[in-house]
Image (cartoon, rainbow, N blue to C red; front, side, top):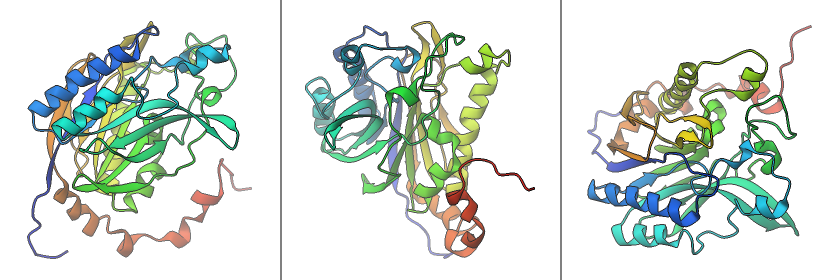
Length: 322
């Protein structure tokens, strides 16, 4: 590693947690809540704010929705649109970029396609990147033994955009969504592009409905432990900042864990939400701190041994030796 002093590159980032969103709550109400958090972020000097997954609606995959018109009502067909335009206007006025998670309905190849998506908007109010969630959890068919459904595989297709990284707002920025954080490949693909900030939103229940239905309960403290474990590991192993923002609280009878946090490239949590309501946490993230790990322990070009990694990209399930 060079002995030359690395100048700091500080970007003040906010993680804008949202409390529960009711099934009948309007887009206007959700956007007003986000604008209030964005205003706080502006007062604290933030240049980038991360909102949660599906920030414009309740987490609708917990219900079986068979009426297509009703299902469509949870999706956005354009971005920006009149409902969310105030966020873009505020970003431009205050010079703040943001990450926004939402359900996307696109017509591609002559058919409807549904994705769990996020966009990255820069400080000029311009969309600079889009991501579509790749690791969809849950199930496709209705399972009556569950207290709540988790029908992401029914309502979304796996993302088809990969994990790009964008050079914007003073750094190399990447995005993922919720369950993606549990898979190390998510962070490593962005790490191999030099990511300095990975942003993600999530809606994580306080209990696993499959486990509860099969008398194999997973306690809430373990859900939160695993949430932070994978965020910290992803940050450390790729020497990147991770900004993870929750939808939290009791939403339509389902408890969401919260735990919004900002993680340093060392793997340390440096900012953490205190509650499960609308809440902003901020930190002065020095992107130059990514350099140490990227040039020492995780200097990929020096230490990776890809000749032994082929199984990761060619095999999906477990294959035991004979």
